[in-house]
Amino acid sequence: MSMAPLLQLEDVTFGYDSEPVLRDVNLQIHDRDFLAIIGPNGGGKTTLLRLILGLESPWAGRVRWAGGGIPRIGYVPQFSTFDRNFPLRLRETVLMGRIGHGGWLRRRNRADGEAVDRVLADLGLAPLADQPIADLSGGQLQRALIARAMVCEPEILFLDEPTASVDAETRGALSNLLAELNRNIPVVVVTHDVTAMAVHVKQIACVNRRLFYHGSGQLSHSQLEEAYGCPVELIAHGVPHRLLHAHDECEHG
Amino acid sequence: MVCRIDCCTPMTSANMAELALFFSYEFTLLALAAGLLASVLGGVLGTFVVVKRLVFIAGGISHAAFAGLGFFYWLGFDPLIGAVLVAVAAALFLGLFSEGQARSQDAMIGVLWAGGMAVGVLFIHLTPGYAPNLMTYLFGDILTVAPRDVVLLAVLAVVTLALLAVLHRGLIAVAFDETFARVQGVPVRALTLLLLVLVALAVILLIQVVGIVLLLALFTLPPMIALMLINRSFALVLLVAVLVGMLMTTGGIAASWTLDLPTGPAIVLTGIVFGSLIWAGKAVSRGKNS
Picture 1 (cartoon, one colour):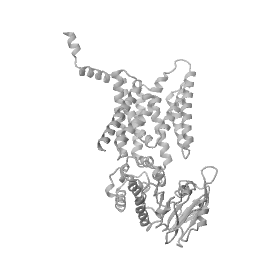
Picture 2: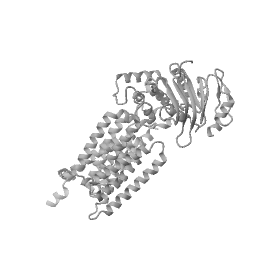
Picture 3: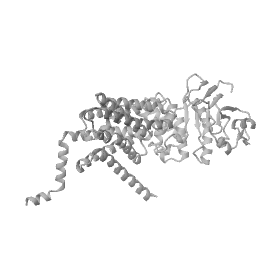
Picture 4: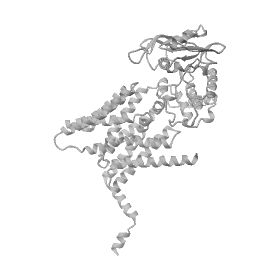
């Protein structure tokens, strides 16, 4: 863990109108991190992700990647950000993940096809490759989006609320899949439902205007309460952390 | 005897004669060509407009363009140039205005929509002498389409198809999932603006074919029908939308020719009847399956 971080946010402040949504945020992401970004709705989780992805520029502070430029990023959006009935086969959807590989103007080539085949096989999606995405279940579509993110051979994987639109069984499978991907690259999950990921998450950042980072130690009750601005219940999960119990009052706060 | 032969002349030969007559006039052939080219533009650009939910941006652009049309008419210049200038300006304005400001963009479309029409009507009113027929601009008259309009439609259709051939990966990625495309380094904003400018140019040329009020039909009905039929391939949706548009325009022109109806409404209603039949057919087949 003494290595230089892959990503470093230094005193980042950002907002959309006159008020900052995030203030003086500091965060480091290292090679094998499995980071959950949690916090109440409207607290700035998605904004933080947009800053990291380079979709917004900070008012103040810096977002710094190791090596200078933005690396290949795997990104899994929320279902609500695209049209589930869009006329595409699963295979074509995954192929879109290759668009950043060698420039978006390039024609697709054989390497693209092989990369897609590999990822489809790895994620158990090969039998569904010719299905239109409109016919996929929530869990299948979620895996398809992860396949689309992984097909560019990313150096880091981001997921925005990956458990929001899938059932409990799928959540467990998803969590295991992410742990497996985490053997090779850091995984960052933005979620209001950290319990679904609990077993595998290694670090927690709690975002509510400011960022409260919880590394390998324990996130104290008072830190969480400060972040959420209301009492929260912590449950012990054994190794290696204490985690946040689903908490309805905070969701509406 | 003569009377009997007359009365019993088979319908087909009467129709054949009418058809031959149709193809013997230059203006009907121009109308047909304009309809087919308009279908290419409406089908291709309209599909992007429908899936990206830009229908009312297209509406706003077309109505705003009327301001430029009226103003240039009053100046004594070619109204088409005024319309193009204002339409492209409106497209760029709405495109740049859009980011993260959905509500104000919605209202701004309304302002451009009504303001454009107000300015256009005002200048046409102020122009001395013979006033152009407002009804033609509003509801179109494909049978009066000029050779120049057909050439312009053809040029724009070729340009649009060429750009689609080169940029299709980026354009489809933007249409499907803008944020993902941006993360992958696709210039989402530039492609969206390009799309809006093409829509603006198409809108201007389509004013002649179906008029300002009805042109949205050529952008929405063929893609909607194609999306009802196809769910596996965006390219196929584009192709089917173009073909549906061609059925709509030729069917509308035929109906207008044989039943003596105004062509703009005939084209639009042909599309609506066609879409309703397909929708009903799908509903029935779904009912049988379940």
